Length: 265
Image 1 (tube, rainbow, N blue to C red):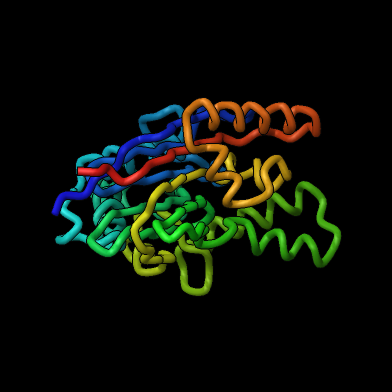
Image 2 (cartoon, helix red, strand yellow; image 1 turned 90 degrees about the vertical axis):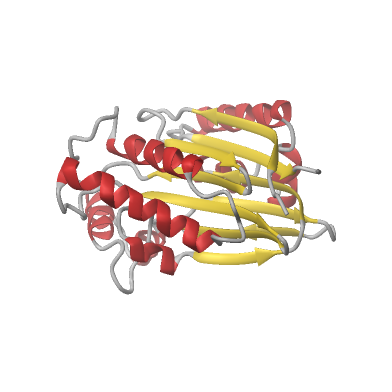
């Protein structure tokens, strides 16, 4: 049986602080959204406008060219293959450097005979409405959760928060810490994987787009899915988000929305 997606909406808004470091796409049964982590460590010299942009673009190319036979892969295997390919590409560019290598949040979805399987690292969000009418939210976790927890326990100024963020980045992809898409194949073993039943509609979003929920522009996953079900609706919601962020003086992050439904053969 052949599985594939139909596109309903694809909208990307660049943020205020840097070049676009999000990416998304779909091919055959596979779909993905990638949110490159803003550089905090000394950057490497990778061939792109920024290191996170390079990683997001490379992962999209790899996933677009990857296996499209769901019966041979599985979403965790698909993610592992993409990370392995990144590692091979990285060797001639930066040798064995890992800590300073760019990282990203990623969610990958794959249609199969049981429905759709989703794998996530860090804080991209996937919302799926299945054929039984139930809405499901899939996210591995908040990327800066530990830093936010530490900051909530005591007074932390901007310089100390930055120091905490840098230390958190240095510890990523090590036991007991946050796992992200970087160049370690083992990260796929730590992905949050969920198998859902037959999907009717799915939206994949970077955390910059999910700010529409955080800021109360929409009430939650169900309304977010409804407000991103067409390109016009998604453009309208992202515009509202940018207006709200300007009003409150928030530096806007890249915002990416990719909405898909299974192709009916």
